[in-house]
Amino acid sequence: MLVTIVIPTHNRAELLRPTLESVLRQTCRDFECIVVDDGGSDSTAELVRSFGDPRLRYTWKPHGERGAARNYGAARAAGEYVYFLDSDDLLSEDHLEHGLAELSRLGMPGVLYSRHRVRS
Image (cartoon, rainbow, N blue to C red):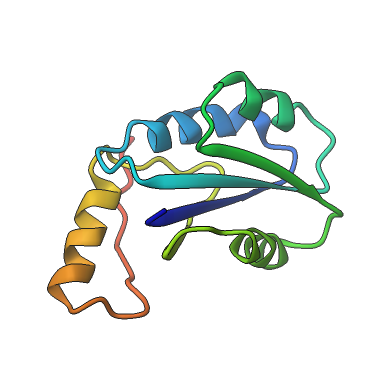
């Protein structure tokens, strides 16, 4: 496993579907995605399972805060790299591919920061 995408969420199932769809459209296919439900009580578990994709993993933890949920997911990551994604963000189809190419170009540093674009 090359990349683990960690998505912390709390009662945001209505926003999560497009995010997960953008994850599953990645041109880089060597990833897992861990959705960390931070004490939510909505239909997030059912939503994640409805995709039927084994790369999507759902886990629930008692409510804390987003940073704790990220750490919870990172501790369960199988990937060589961990990518944090908010539950209302979308990835371009080649986002992971370009990020990994940049890591390779830079000699595989420990951290890569990327900019984002907002489109209306």
